[in-house]
Length: 202
Image (cartoon, rainbow, N blue to C red; front, top):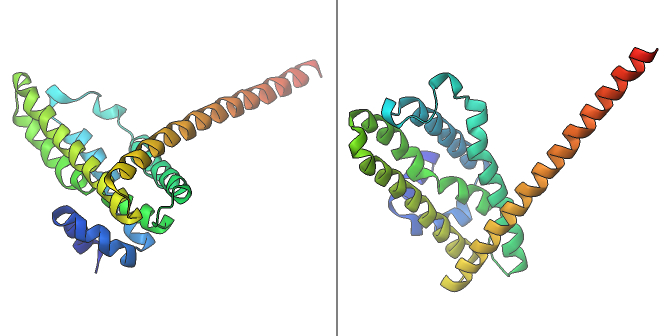
């Protein structure tokens, strides 16, 4: 089964998809889906109606925008695998890695059409635009919860608990990452300043 057929299955029959992905998960499926998600994110920002744009087109960088997709996806996969392993989850990292990428399928298929439709809406119709964005977000969240339940074979209550722990773990990883970035940045600045000072005195 190729990526397109799996994406269609995830969109229309998510329960069957998450049951099947435990046997069919392949690494390249995840990279294809994440690549499409980045492209959809970039195009939706570019094609959004003037009244709904939050940034000027020249301020949009595909490299920076890709971090909004890649970082949450990677940290979710790692954290969920770690938490579920401790809590007797049955899912393997590869299944979580690939399954999580496919949870973005509603965003991939709908974000660009919604952005195009926004060009036809007036400011007074912003509620409709926001409602469509919320609909996509809720659908993605539903697929994420379904993935946790089916891949790890958790009960409903345990699914919610593991999801909460995973989100907390993601924030901790992000906090540590930002802390390390700040420390490394300050260390580099210190070394550069020291080098300039030594050169000046010599």
